[in-house]
Amino acid sequence: MPCTDLQGANPSLRGIESPQITAGVTLSFSLHGNIDRIEVSSYRIPTEIPESDGTYRWEHIDLSIVMVHAQGKYGLGYTYAGQPVSALIEGVLSRVIKGMDPMSPQLAYMSMWRNIRNMGRPGICSMAISAVDCALWDLKARLLEEPLVTLLGQVREVAAIYGSGGFTSYTDRELANQFEGWASQGIRAVKMKIGREPARDRERVGVARQAIGNATRLYVDANGAYAPREALAQTEMLAEHDVRWFEEPVSSDNLTGMRFVREHVGPRINIAAGEYGYDLCYFREMLNSGAVDVLQADITRCGGVTGFMQVAALCQAHNVQLSAHTAPAEHTPVACAAIPFTEIEYFHDHVRIEQMFFDGVPDLVDGQLRPDLSRAGNGLELRRKDAEKFAA
Image 1 (tube, one colour):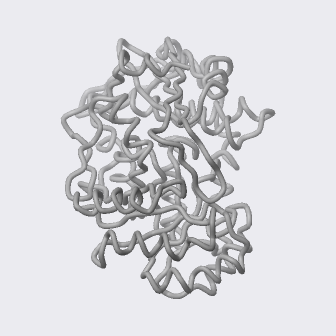
Image 2 (cartoon, helix red, strand yellow; image 1 turned 135 degrees about the horizontal axis):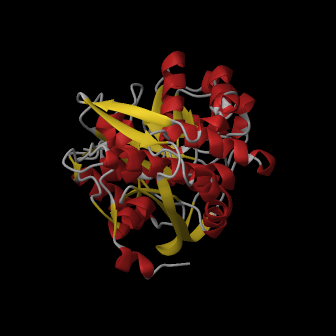
């Protein structure tokens, strides 16, 4: 836990033999010298068309991929951020984890947190640690020749998803086509962006509802575009179109304002937020404030596999559902291992990129993703030649 457990990572543990027991066989891994190489690469992928939400516009997606090598195998992790993250991994984190025991990703996690103390935890530092932590857990699973979800403890066979796009830059026809396509694939919920032009929100939400009919759930995401009373005023219109999920009605930094909206919104609309949570203290504060019905965590930001599973335990303690924010391929194993879980965000940009960059991406069947238990680790293999075209 970045907030309280950094003192528990004892540097004196390096060099001690760490026996691991698997199926009656003792496997001895040295804590020194096992992680021998770290590869990092950055990419910039143009979007199909310019995109926007309630508060931001973009025309490309940045991606950093890390591979951690030990004993002739590697683990793969990534985060949706670019060269600054890669530079931090190369310049700082690689030196921290090199020589550490690949069987102890939590020890590496705590060591990384300690070594970025004077740089600040949120943002780039957390995203860099997240990518490395995902790679470390993937490496451990591959060394044990187990699927990552099995290593974590599988509690469900499949993870439900919701289609996410509906950008404010879309025409009404583009919005309708995207949502009609997802509904026809058996996806049971879709999410659109609102808030850039509040006067048009009613019309756009109506277009979305007409496109998907009444059988598919409709979610909206304002990306913090509204003040609390503005957001509350919009909920009347959202209720008319049977919207079930209102994400970041106000800035996620304004937990008091978010709680105000949650306390006054109708009973059928859930308030969701958390995608910009970078450490466990933030998620604890969000849950303690009573600001959300559904807490979102992003494995590429919140501390990787280690952080995501810690957030899941917090949600379980607070009886709050957990949703995985974007990066569906990387989230599938943890979503099937976390006890409090609702849906993975099947984000249009990330779905496209993961299918371009990786073999082994989980198949979408009837609105659900299923981890491939025939593949070790997270099951992903980088298509290096395809990725090179987007090298930053």
